[in-house]
Image (tube, rainbow, N blue to C red):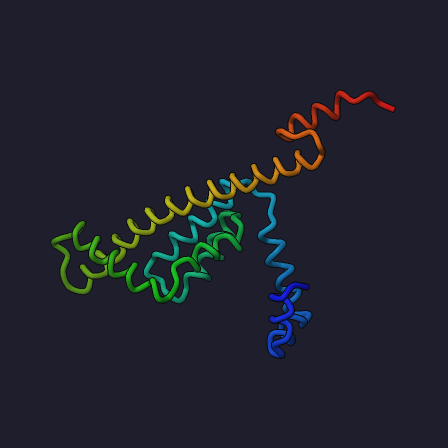
Length: 177
């Protein structure tokens, strides 16, 4: 094992957690959720839904809401929760402040407590929708690129090069033994 792994295992606390059966089962389940055969657009959609939920004024319940929405919509739960966790606690006040300012621009006549909530909900909806669109584009592009490069690497490993369809065609043209 390299220096990084050796350094991590030399710490007594990390070694206890890292070697525990509960931790290993948890990691196996997370890997199983992330290594999905879902198409890139669907994983990107799950992340985008999570990002939208992270911008809503439901702080403290966002992960539960994301899990419920992912379950109902049959989206990848790990990807949806990952999208929620993009809006970290130290970023949230800035998101809410920006959303409130946007809401006050869109609803200039709103006042009082009801007006505050109307501005906040409208602002977080617009900010969340914009952030979700950006998240979908970024995730879809990154996942599509990663899958393309993996397919090209696998095709290169067969010695045929090119696309997987070319490799399949070459195998089909081989004479049967």
